[in-house]
Amino acid sequence: MAPIKLKQPQNSAAKSVASSTEARTLVRETLRISASLASSPPADSVPPTLSLAGPQARKFGIVEDQFIGSSLRLICSEEIDGRRWNYVAENELSGRSKNGSIRAVCCQKPQAPIDEMMSFIRSYVVPEGFPDSVTPSYVPYMTWRALKHFFGGAMGVFTTQSLLSSVGVARNKATPGAIAINWILKDGAGRVGKMLFARQGKKFDYDLKQLRFAGDLLMELGAGVELATAAAPHLFLPLACAANVAKNVAAVTSTSTRTPIYKAFAKGENIGDVTAKGECVGNIADLLGTGLSILISKRNPSLFTTFGLLSCGYIFSSYNEVRSVVLHTMNRARFNVAVESFIKTGRVPTLQNGNMNERILSFPWLKESPVVLGPRFKDAFQDAGSYLAIEPLFDREKYIVTYNQTRGKVYALLKDQAKSDDILKAAFHAHVLLHFIRSSSGGQKSSRKQGDAFSNSVPAVTNLEAQIAASCKMVSTSYEIFKSKASEQGWVMAESLLNPGRARLCPR
Image (cartoon, rainbow, N blue to C red):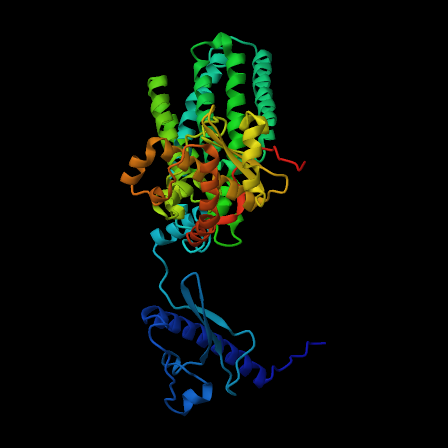
C-alpha cells in the first residue's frame, strides 16, 4: 500500500514562520538597543523620561525613549563593580512579557585592556573595598613589606648557591648519601630551634615591633652564616645548622607577630582578606627578587659585595616596615612616649606620633629601663624601714612605688589584687616619681627650658619619703586626666601590654 501523505495544517506552518520572524526581530532589536545604549550617556547622568509617543508605545508598555518602536520593555537596572546593566524583556501582542525573554544589556563601553589588567591585579594585592576597608597605614606598610621581600628573595639565590656549593653538589666532592644526611641534620637543627623559641609566648604581644625587627636581623644573620659556608666548606654542617636555627627562630617571630599587625589594619571583620592580600604581596615581591637575582648571578658578581648591598636594603626596608605600623594599644615603649609627653607638655601624642616615636631598637631582653614594673621585693628594698615608711601611702592602691638609690631605678611593686588598670596606674606613678627625682637632683633648670608643664609643681625636697608623698598627690589628680586624653587620641587603655613581672605582694 502506498504511504498516505498527511497534509500539514496551515496554522502550524504559519506559527513556524511567525516564531522564526519573532526570533529574527528579537535579535535585531537586541543588537539595536545594545548599540544605542553603548553610544548614549550613562543612565545615572540622564534620568529616564516617560515616553507615551502614540498608542503603539503604550500598547507595548515602553517606558523609555530608546525603546520606542521596539517590542522590548525595560524591566530594571543594576550596578556591579562600577558597571551598569539594564534588563529588558520582549512583550507579546497582549502587552505581557514573554516567559524566558529577559536579556541583560550593558550600558557602558567595554573597559580598555589596561584597565582590565589593573582591575585583575588589584583583586590580588588589595583587600576588597580598598581603601575604605583598611587604615591609612596599610599602604606604607605594604610598600616596605614588598621591598623587604624583594631583597630577601634576591638574597635567597646567593645563599642557596653557597650552601649547594659548600655541601659538594656543585663540585661533586661528596656522595649523594652524605649530602642528604647533612641537609637533613641542618633542617632538623632548625626545627629544634623553632620549638625552643616558641615558648616565649606572650612576649610577642608585649613587644611586637621590637621582636619583629629583631627577627629580621636574626634572619639576616642566618643568611650571612649560610654565605660563609662557601668560604669554609669543611665547616658546612655546624655553620648550616647555626644558620638554620637563626632563620627558623626568625620565622617563628614573623609568624607570631603577623596576625596582630594585620588586625591593626582591618576596619571590620576582614582580617582574613587583609592577611591573604598581604601574603600575596610578599610572595609576588619575593618572586621578582628571585628572578632579578638569577639574572645578576649569571654575570658572576662579587658574592659578598652583592650580599652586603642586598642586606642593607633588607634591613632598611624592615625597619621602615615596622615603624609604619600604627597600633592602638600601649606596650611599655609606647606608654613611655605617651607619659613623657604628658608630663612635659600636658598633652598625649596621637596614635601616629606615638607609634612613630616608639623605640624599635630597644630590645626587650636588654633591661636598661629606669622603671621596673612588677619586680621582686628584694630588688626594690634594701631594708625594712624604707618599706614600712611608705607602705601607708599606698593602702588604697594595688601597688607600691619606690626608688632604689643604689641602682638608680624606680620600682613599682604590684599587689596580688592588681588588675589591668592598676598596672597602668603603677607604671604612670613610677614615671611621675622618676620625673620628680630627676628634677630635684638638678634637672629643674633644663625642664623649665623645655617648657615642662610640671616644673612649677616639683617640690624642693631631698628625702625620698617626701618625694613619694608628693608624687602620690600628683597622680591622684593627673592619672584620670591622662587616661581621658589618651582615649580621646584613640589609645586603648583597657588592655595592659606593659609586660610586668610575675611577683605580687601578698597581705600579711
